[in-house]
Length: 301
Image (tube, rainbow, N blue to C red; front, side, top):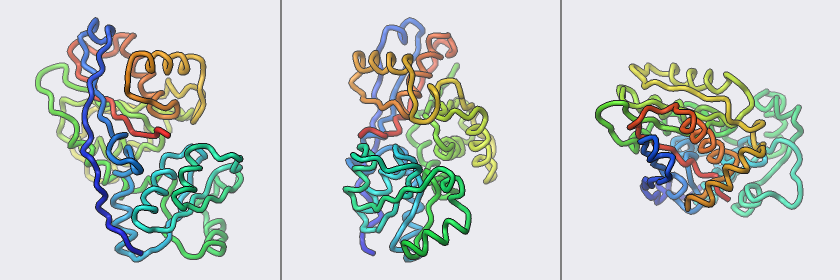
């Protein structure tokens, strides 16, 4: 295996959103553009992968296998990293591989990832020895990276996101918002923001699974001795039907956003976060003077 772990990552810029509703409520809304850090490896996924890739290289693995759905940003980014660093990648995809492939899976395949589908019943057993032994018999030995790349190494990598959150003095402080699919990124961010009492972290679940991601975030926070984490909350109200699902309200918001902003969104993650964020703004959730930082986690294809 060859390749250099250190990709040329561009420090993410912060863009301000200017809309009448924000002025009316004396709110500031900025966007942390993780979608702009690298042409192939974008968003929060690099922060989740970096420490895993270092571990893989240190252990001498030449092949990485991971799991994901048909629209998994993790699968897409893993394929891009594998291409750049010359690591063989295998993506085990939930459900059928419908032709033509969607843009996520098409990109992964173009980067050299071997795609293999399994049915949903088998997918639910993805960490059982029976399935893993079957996969090793088929593909040879591999380093197993969990679905979404979510493990302690990933969470530790996401702690670095706290460095991009500006310090705010005075009241009411600031709020950091991000979409949540596994809770690992949010868990790492909360850990990285320890002792930052002026910050509140809001995660917008993209899953139709009330309470699940809040429990996952809590699990990652409590996995280490995280003293004085900031206030945090996972909001389950804006999944719009579940993962990769949509509805008329989300579609209307996406049209509104496209007409009023030059920052591109997608409907699986970032679209739902901004949809929920603006619903909260309209409801008066945020006190006047709050500075909101929305993390754009990528996922644009």
